[in-house]
Image (cartoon, rainbow, N blue to C red):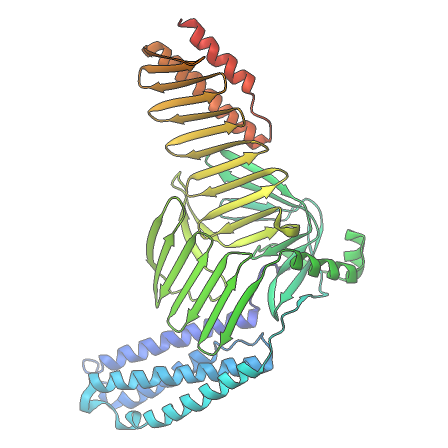
Length: 472
């Protein structure tokens, strides 16, 4: 079995893990050198620092990008060597300042050699990157896989599944893995504060970072499942990705990576020790091990954490529902033709649009529309609306607006506006009865929107008038 949505092969993940281990080794060796006095290790001062320097170069070299063609891979390797030289020179200067006369002269004498290495490898790396043209084509690989019927994957509040055996093809854009095109329908269920919401997005869809388990297959089985030959599927997959109009810009040279994707509303600026990512309404700023997360939506939030996860491809962020349940959220998407239907998770929540309905869910806030009807929910209030009414229920009051009349309940006071007249009544029983009826109707209207049914305005008017009539 293989997993869709992986942007790194097993060799890349092993190299990254080894790079992280080598970096940890550097930190440990430097720490031991700093406390070499109490440990009586002065005689090993040179060996500790030389070993730390060697591991530093290994750590940088293992970060080489190998899936971008031989010329750019060479540029990436040389660029990493140049940065390792820079880090080594800075380390020697700091070590000389801290250690003073006890700092090994044999290490200090390496600065000139390191500077020459830095300049030579840096210049060659930039030269290779500038003369190498990147592949900007969209290409579907003729390596079909099958996602078996009933396969499910849970990501945060979302459960994604396929109802029948479904073929998928991996797609490469600009020479890099982009995602997979799924030639079947995607069934999604969402655990929301107002209950379970289900959707079906018709295929074909472009999947990005959706980790379905799949098995490899051949063109004959792919044709049997889809009714189309493999070459036609590959052509359709390329057209599907192209139809999304995901224009993007990439600057990828040694030391600097800048990516902007208008279609996905994503930006990524990655320079040594600093990374800034923007995904929809949310930004993540990383300086060394420090993460600063800024939510720029209508419910702003700033969260500061520390992390040793240096995954360049997928960022994981802990999120909290309004009901207090923690879950791990991850950016992923499944997008239909022209982007008209989709299911998508970004840093600050989940959104979906399918068959005339749409939903947004983030941190306890929920908004859903179905046809011309809609509702909004947060822990403080519920608002339902249709072309002919709005109903707003809060912890302290209720307001109902229709073309026929308007009712507002504030404590024990009931304000009624109808036929151009306004009456205000202080009546605890009337207020309580109206509050109970309207709150129950609001819950029913929410369920109608979730089920894709039209809101029953006649029921709303008749039950409200019935309560008002009993207290005239």
